[in-house]
Amino acid sequence: MMRWPLARTWVLAAALAAAGPLRAADPAEAIRLYALDCGHATFKDSGFFSDTGEYDGKPGAAAVPCFLIRHPKGTLLWDTGLSDKIAESPNGVENEGIHMSMARTLASQLKELGLSAADVTYLAFSHLHFDHTSNANAFGASTWIMNGSDLKWALGTPTPFGVDPASFSAYSKAKTQMIEGDYDVFGDGAVRILKTPGHTPGHQVLLLQLRKSGTVILSGDLYHLRDNRKFRRIPTFNSSRAETLASIDRIERIVKNRKARFVVQHDPNDFAALPRFPAYLE
Ligand SMILES: [Zn+2]
Image 1 (cartoon, rainbow, N blue to C red):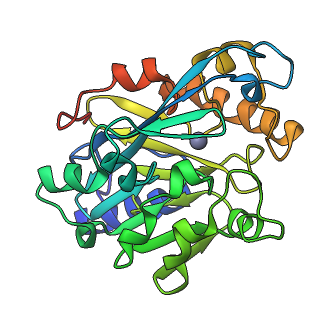
Image 2: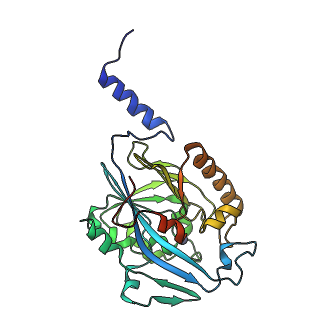
Image 3: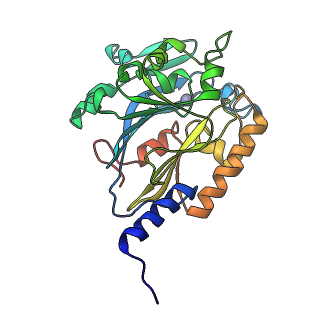
């Protein structure tokens, strides 16, 4: 039986990696996932987290993490949290029944890893609500991976609820990679943006293939709380209820097929269950 030269096998492997939509990464490549604390929010009335009334009149709380992925080919920052300026107010800030606070800044956490904003190769957002885009303008030197549908929606008139176009205005001068659907950030299948519209028109989740932890999926705002996932509760302010349910169907199948760890980004329990920074998943 003829054996293929090693080089040719590598070429084939690379071709398969490019073609296979959910192929696992080369297990030899070490990837680290850091969960950064990018704020905390509490709500007097968290009714808007469900359009079927379960949270009406009830208080609620949300974690606001950012995620830093260190890959041999570069660094990706997924979501940029609440504004670092909030950290200047030790008791946080109050706005229309929402209290927001930051125990520490995103910048200080990057610094703890020996990084500056300029060391972040890629910037990507689950979607363009302000609690995912504040601080984005600090990353003018990064390549911004932008979903075209979300950008068009976020720049629409009138400005949609929850969007602060000024918080991500630096995209217009930055290097950008415009995308519409799924996107393989480093080209090896290890870090993939998956299209999951519904919360916003261009909402997306992030799928990671890690050496020890296996598949990890970061929710964006596909769900805000564990109970939203458990009971399929859809927020009042989603752009499309039907698209949200279709996106949930897709992602839950992937979770099952790959036995993935699913992280509900805003759920304080899910955030607390992740390694405490500067520890990481790998
Ligand atoms: Zn959010």
